[in-house]
Image (cartoon, rainbow, N blue to C red; front, side, top):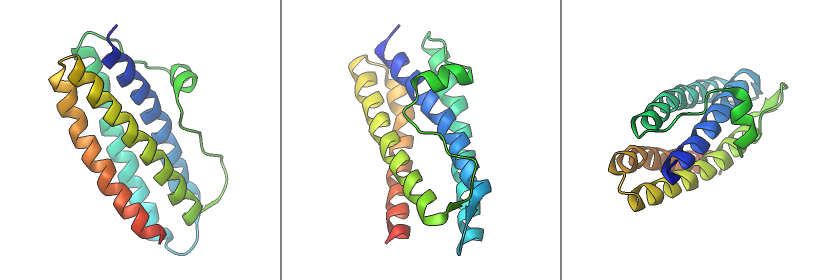
Length: 145
C-alpha cells in the first residue's frame, strides 16, 4: 500500500473522530454567544462530513481500502474524543482550534507524500483542505482574542 493511502486513512480516522467531537460540542456548549457558535460548529461538522466521503472515495480511486469502522478510527486517531458534558464556548473553540492545527499539519504531510508519489489528484484534493484550515484558524484565533 502506498504511503499516500496510509496518510489518507490516518486523516480519514481523524476526520471521523473530529466530526463526532465537534457535533458533541455543538450539542453541549453553553454561554454567551451560544447561538452563533452553535451554528458555526454545525457548519464545521457538515464540511467535515463532506471531506470524509471525498477522502474515502479518493483512497478507493488510487487502489486503497478506506478504514470504515469506529474501532479502526479509534485505533489510529490522534484526535481526543469529547466528553458528554457541558463545555464553555471558549474551551470548545480553543480545542477545535488545536485540532484544526493538527489537521492542517496532516494535510500538508499528505500533500508532500502525494507529490513525492506523483499522485497529483490527491495533492490537488488536499489543497482546498489546506486553504480551508488556514482560513478557519485565522477566524478562530480572531474569536479567541
